[in-house]
Length: 321
Image 1: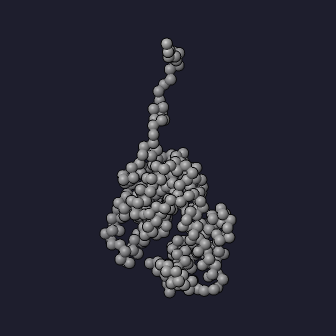
Image 2: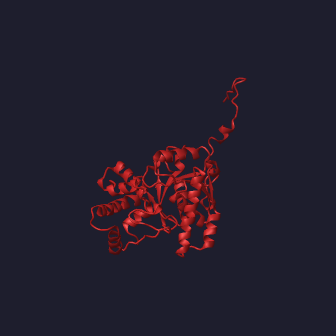
Image 3: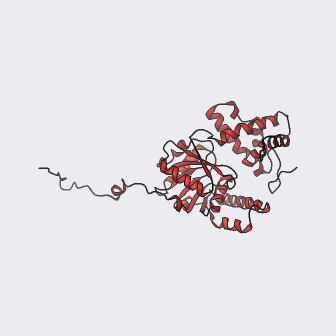
């Protein structure tokens, strides 16, 4: 006859709420019901992602570090869309509808109930890990964390989170609202479910998601960096002018934009950071930054966003002849 041993009097284990939920599965996010996303960092990429999401009918909350950053971020997205209006690429009513879905905050807790959180801060590993740690402490268990990184290890970024299976990378290209592709980067512990949901989210944004293995630079950055670097070396060596280099490449290879203007559009400081990361991680000469690029960044010539890089630009972002 089987017997059941009972605890001695006074030794009964109290049933805690934590014991009841400990073995419960994490709720699954329905990609068709993604209604609000939070974006940490309202720089060029942050506002680009915000605009793309808003155009897809998704509400956006952008978290910035202070009021000055909020003002700068808001001004940038307004200026970007005003340029599109002048080019007949957007109407004033479309701009108004997009901005109605975007809000800014300086309190990171305001994004804790968003369905998806995207960090779009500077390309700095420790900064991104600290952001992951912070949002991990305030967001529900089902929230997916997305890192918009172009060169860093997604698995190392995910070390700042206790839910590494729900951390994934999305490498958007600038300008985000116009470029139809996004690289989907899985970390070592990223789950199939997280990948499926994120791929559906990319489709909702109108993007084609290309899955890539975790490796420095992924596809697009690794391919474009040597191309830009070589064009910079040609300019530095005096073989041709910046306009001559871009004209030759556009007409010779049917490119919509030349390599030096493309670099200016991306931001020379951003490109320098990519090159330094790839040079450090892979040690291959093709990624070693051109000295001319370093010189321009030191001088504050960062490309279109500063008004001067390899070309000079007017207030509307057009090249000054």
